[in-house]
Structures are given as structure tokens and as C-alpha cells.
Length: 127
Image (cartoon, rainbow, N blue to C red; front, side, top):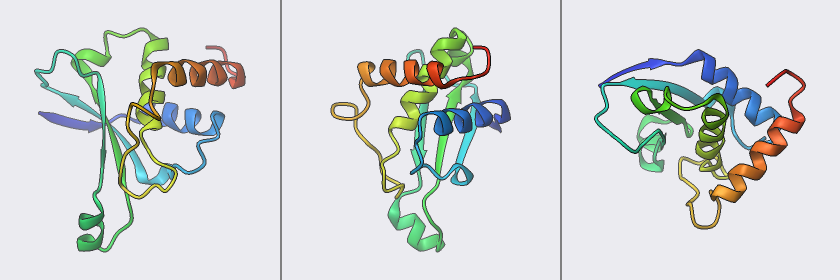
């Protein structure tokens, strides 16, 4: 596997965070990485957090990384790429402590669709 920063989607994530008022997400502690070489067939993107024990060991605060799996993500439409990014950002809890919100109560297809509609309506740039 090979990883590289994805500055384009770093900007997209920042735009989503701003337009959806996800103020609990500390953008300077969120990194968007693009992976190459995955054999995954179904996973499009995934989020990683720095666990509390590692934060203590490293004397640092929480960080999150969203991994975009190029082989699968690049095949998506622009709309689905935005929805995928919204989905991953929804996993970050209000406390921004390194943990995750689960699918059942927090990250649902309906919530992603509703957030996407809000994002589009708040977007003054051409989609």
C-alpha cells in the first residue's frame, strides 16, 4: 500500500465541514489520504482515529485521517464522492476525542442524503 496526501479532498472536507456547521471537527487535525494498491472490492473510504492510549503515550490530542481508496473511490460520480466524504465525517463524534460514531444511530443513508441536500443548498459555488 502506498499513501499520499489528497489536498483536493482536504479542501472538499473543509468546505463540507463549513457548510454543514460541523464545528466540532478540528480541520487542522484531520488529514485526507489517498491509498493506492488496495485489494478491497467494497470499501470506498474509511476513517482512522488516534486512540486515547496513543494520544497519552504521544502526549498529543486526537487526530483523524480519512483514507480514500483510489481503486474504488475514483470510479464514483462527483456527487457520490461528496456523499462518501460526508459519510466519513459523520463518524467523528462531537467530542473529537479519537473515537467513532456508529452507523446504527448516527451514520445512516438518510442522514447522509439529508446532509448532502443541505450541503448543495448551502453551496454558493456551482456544483
